[in-house]
Image (tube, rainbow, N blue to C red; front, side):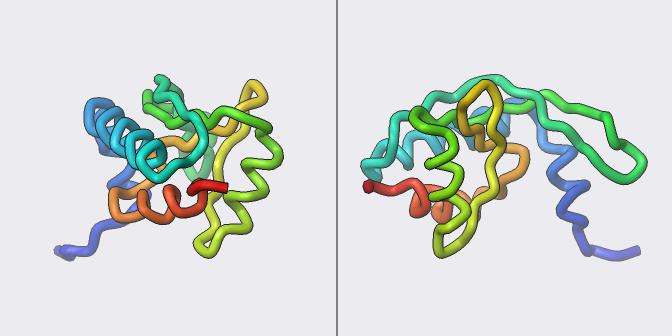
Length: 113
């Protein structure tokens, strides 16, 4: 057996309480860095591939206030590009798609400015 962890499998297995805590930590870090206004909201993550193209899982997301297209463009153009989802005219950063060690890059991408 192997000790290698498959990132997709690891993210599928994270429980909603951990995801909510991750989203709340990200929201607090964005606020502390002087970033845009954000809220933490329940969401649904779509697996979207392989043997599970339509499967979805409960999740939590940080939702960024402001002009979605401009925020999305800013995230993608960051030193470490961040790919978000736009739904209902808002930018959603799903905690299921982020690892704890990736949060500082998201904060930097959304920093003041």
